[in-house]
Length: 262
Image 1: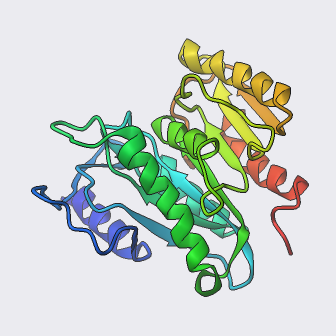
Image 2 (image 1 turned 90 degrees about the horizontal axis):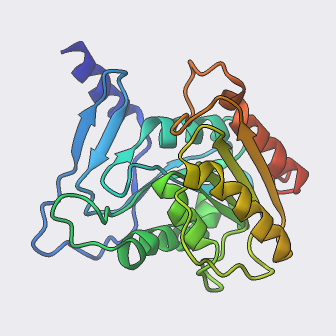
């Protein structure tokens, strides 16, 4: 019972989500999300049919902004350690952050597709933030993407499949599922890459390979591979390992690229 009360309070204390497709009602779909709570008290969301972004805004200004897509194998979304925790930390340091709820292509009975729906939600999130930049206190030229695991796949796809409205200013891929056969143009957004050396082989070895591919394409990239670290470390207060400081390294990287502004 106390755990349920804590969960309800956490949801009530969060900012109001911004719908991405307010004029669309899912045809023939239940619209209530399913939420489970892990033994550690972290919330995991599934059955997403109304995509949204939850805004965490610093004091008004022209802040850099990042769309954060949690992971969960395209079956669910680990909203806390791969979403809200990172967003709060960044907003406290002058970066606007928006936690993305996207449609899940591998959920039970799902009719959604990764590129047809989940990627479209990521791209629409970029559009919405840019369209509302003035009211949100965001610099529309400094809107980037961050993704964890399956959410990292969306961030990576958004960074190579874009138009003038949806091109991210930067990308942060945190132990991402790496899309196959990506074409990397020279103007691919600058990339901040993070994983653990003990992660699955296609990530622990695939991310350094992506780093080299970015460099060969003429794109800017920074890579961090943490020793004795596996998958899913995210942002947790109790993580006192070197990998627990990766978000500070990301913030430093934004500053080094003059993306933080004043």
